[in-house]
Image 1 (cartoon, rainbow, N blue to C red):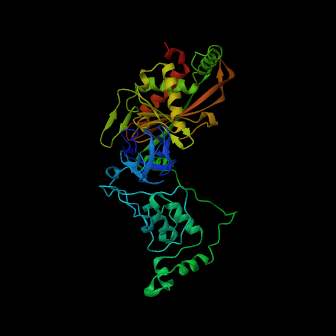
Image 2: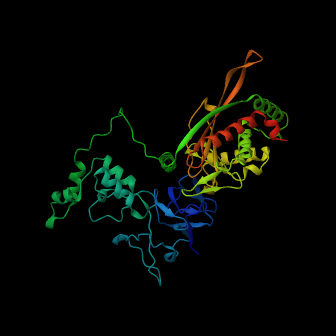
Image 3: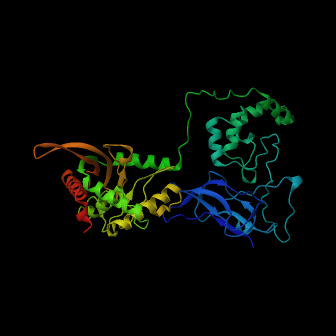
Length: 442
């Protein structure tokens, strides 16, 4: 029995996903667990594995298509099996070439989606030979001044897709329908093969020089989301940053002891300084509700639990996964949770549900030697803490100069939600708590 392959829903907040790359083609034998295609949300990438075996009978979308969650994207079944009831309404039904038209199945006129085992040699394109052009390809053709109807289709079901239009433009062929009509030499103004041959023989547009002064790189979906979110944040909020620092002597001493214990006993968790800062933030934030909140325009939503966002640098861009109810976790539990969501974010397989819902965010750039910076708030949160590096500073103790390790903290807050004094009190209490971290564990 033919089985529909649907676009999965990765998280309750995700409505559609973009097809990345098809790993199988129509006609391939499929086994359970085979990767069929890759896809991505605006924040993470995934691979869809086959849940049934058989033959890949049809594919209804192509790389780059934005597909609604739970829509049918392909069909797996047995060769010659009728799958007409599984064809989505949005799928075009390509007509089979007259000379190779497949015989209708007995008792049904189900659509046929043929696909060659290997790319066939491209026949000269004509204006009336087009079997379908994707919207993405049409938009690219308009931008490049290229006639998409002349492109050699390589997409599913003989469809012209974006890469076909780009290849056409790079070949130097940029004729428009009006130009083709002017070139036609056939009876009744019809375009003949010799006309297309003449067009193909025309001098190609000069190729881009190897030493071109610049290259344009298309933004990834993640980069687009980051750009949109950061622009909205700085445009809509009244953001202000306070910088402070604390004596990290106790923190470094505890970290040294924990690291030594972990080296001698593998069962001992590897607690980092970042873990300890996250732990202190989760505890102190409970006493400062206006920073553990969302600003909603005409109201402020205060959270009973601390849902701590942690900025993570990934190959696909900045992601901010959330540790929910961080204030209820022990230091060991919080450390494990932070490492787990960081791994998931960096692998690109994190659930979108874990990338939303934070009530406050911590961004640590200390490992890059950053002494002070202005972190940008993730709306609708009201604050974000930047963690800086440790530097040696000098102070006077009993009349004598003494050096100590100072760690900087940069708090950005939304001045619409709270004033400078309460924001400063949070930063002051956090610094004091970190200087006396042992007391926090009691």
